[in-house]
Image (cartoon, rainbow, N blue to C red; front, top):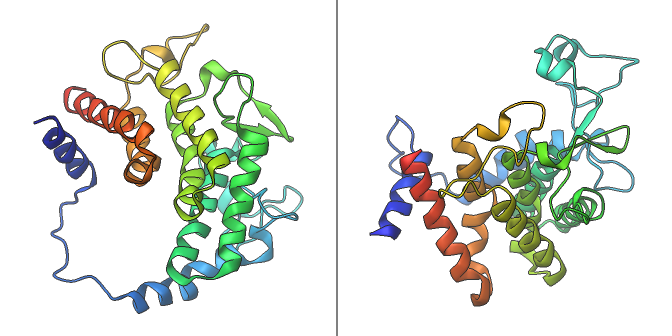
Length: 255
């Protein structure tokens, strides 16, 4: 019964109003889409720092990385939640770009894509994993981690796992798995509300953000890394992750 709740919750979260197509395009169509439409934006020089891995958060529609000396209107005229934070470097964006390169390698076997994915994962491990708290940095400003650990959101932490999870899926690197497990344990230990849900933030001394109960605090643990990794984890971890998936599904049903 509990596994059926999990399946129903995941299906409900991912479904759309439109029925699925009778058949999906074959592999050649996906590879063409990647190489023609997506790849150029993510493989141009402005997408990749030197050394690779320190990927920029903000880039213009033509692919140029954000430059305050030569600003592009699509960013300066964006909503304040973007335009006021153009000096931030978000770990979730670096993680998503890392994930992209992993998917590109998975589709094409292009070794350069794998090297870029591994570089992104290594940057996250070396810079964004908080060795003091066990969590992960949400963003950097001027190369310095910004914001107190207690206000880092569970959604940010879930997406810090995303790129790491994809690279582990491809490489089975045990050192990478150690950081993935440590961060996941930190999330479930630090943000547990005692009633089966994960909090939005761990503590908010100046407000009441820790009272928020967000669907994405639960859901993004599932879709960012847990569904991808649980089936391939060593058995010593797989059963615990499976129980946590059921817990999250139950929590979303009753949220």
